[in-house]
Length: 485
Image (cartoon, rainbow, N blue to C red; front, side, top):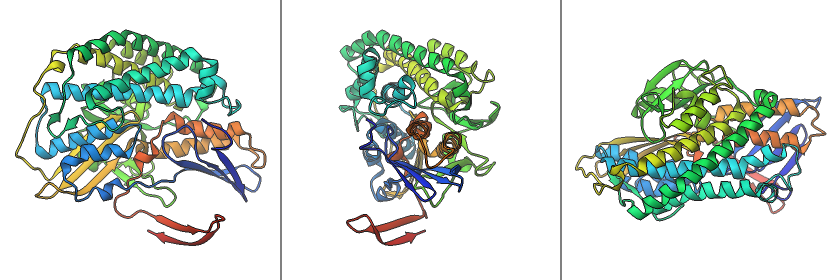
């Protein structure tokens, strides 16, 4: 919930700080630097936490990674679980059985449904339903439950459906254990399959209602949607035969006009994607190497994926994609507020995909694991996490102990765009630094919410990264600091 007790705006000479950013996963703040006339010079989102999974997993057996890395985050542990398992599959050089592949895909679809429901209904809908300038005491999920109880129940039900699929396969809704190198450790039972098939029509109907809600909002607020943190960027996402793909496939980068810049295998990501580091954030800035930083920056996540693909393989979601693209030039939509629409299209696709998987005979198969005596020295695993492209890259020694880890997490890909959007909105809505309405601050926060960032997932610097350690006294005054580059 957002209120004055948990969100604070501090003004110092020429600076406005919003700390913390609310209704996101993880810890971040916004710093606005003002000119002498009170207008905005610059604005930045700072990630204020550091996790370091890339370092402390060194020396662990690679087979532990599908269990260790989900602890990165309690919101999207399935994504890390699956990316880690796919990297382990590459290390032992195996191809999954059809049953194992589809069971992993099923858990992944459950993750997409539950996470997208959380993002839209719980974190973002209060701004859309009440308005950016509404009282923060009302503009939160409790206010939604009080004023829109049917919508609140709908969101809870959709999220619960996805979480129950995760729990069924992985024993827990958070930090499940299901995927193992070469396969999975549990099948789905007939009664479990039949229960989810029975619930699916209601879930699909609920998602279509939510889509109509967001479409009506965007149509009624077309002028706002056109200007709100809108950026013309490239987009990155997994595709298979041109279709939207969330579990497997090749990476496709498209230009702001929709031209395919390049489509490449996931294991070649490091040849294509570089990571830029700045001294004011723990979060890196990925970019397309052939163009360079910042010109080679791009966006990922729901907006990135629906812009990168040609079509969607399920009928209801594909029809929504057609209507979605009418908001752009017929191919690409750059409007940042359309992340919400794209997110619900993906949730609808995932529900349709769950129905396909549950009706597939392979889902009830018993061939769940492929073994191997191979030990390759490195492996790459890539999935489309709810927030965007997630890359796990491991290197191991002759014993299978981890020697190097690189994680490129979805929010990192979007880091440049988030900062650009925050600054754009700050310059538009803050014209007098001495008199800043709360709604202006909330608009900056909502730019970040559009991307549904996972900041705790994202800070895993490898190599040299600027780090400043501060020693404070009991009054919060700085005694000394140590800067390490």
